[in-house]
Image (cartoon, rainbow, N blue to C red; front, top):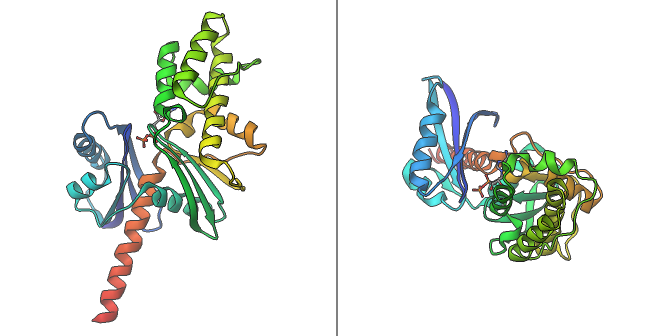
Length: 272
Ligand code: ADP
């Protein structure tokens, strides 16, 4: 029988599930669209996660996070439902105990997390400005007729990124349309879009804060190499995208559940 821990992150755009072993390594992960029903996406993710896995798995505990963490916890009987800041921070620290800053961009919000000595000491979250999110990138990619997964490769080809307003989604979009009408190349518009998103993110979330290395970039948008490059250009140093960038919240939730269950059983053992 193999012990494992379940982590679930229900976001507005995607639902992520991980199975983690006792050593905190991910055995299996699932990333799927949340769609209109978080309940359905959790059920579907559950089925996918356990299909084809060995029958002898023993789930020792479960943790949930994300905007749908409560519903996911109620559905699965999870041991803990934790906010995304803590879950993302915990997973980043487990990848690199020296991590100082986490940049996280998801479908409908973005966050910055400040860490010292393996603990989160400050954070900032933006849930109101659409310009700094994955959904905004999705919308612009579809307007230009390209998959969002190709933004990075195309932006990399740019030799002359155009200037796009980054403060507000409405202005950014109208700037982009303007540039298209002027005949600017898609790659230059996309590179400008990445620069604008990063400028907006840093202005919104990091004004007056020092971004210290090592910096980790996670969340679905970390797949976008155009945004990674734009961050590196703006910050002036390299940032790391962890291998499990897309499921860091779910992974963190599994780690938190493991800690909680182990602590509970230690207390029980002491009392008996
Ligand atoms: P949530 O906020 O629901 O947790 P995610 O963290 O999964 O969402 O982020 C979703 C966003 O990630 C999408 O809106 C999209 O912009 C981006 N994304 C996801 N997969 C890719 C990919 N392969 N390439 C580029 N961007 C991606």
